[in-house]
Length: 99
Image (cartoon, rainbow, N blue to C red; front, side):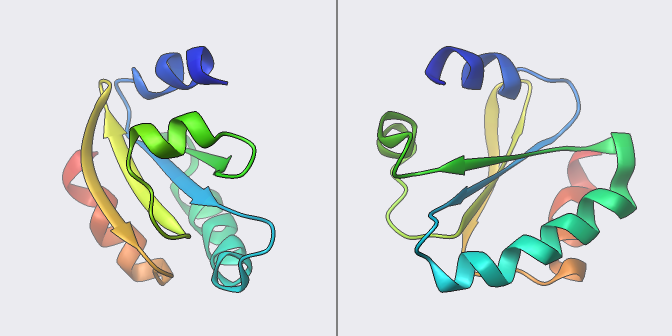
């Protein structure tokens, strides 16, 4: 996944990464919010889910300490990051400056 991850975040459109874990209850709360976000945003943004237990190298590289952690990348650069559940409007506000 490491090589693919680097290719994914090189996008010229914003890439929202959801660092999550299967055992994480707040991650389960975030999942339907992200689904709504994807349906509303369409092709303006890519949303990728990264399981920190299955991809520990990526989690370590970006110092993911808690899940869920949401991060926005643009042209390979980390431009925004927040831990915890974020409501739909919060996600829209976070991504807006990078569209």
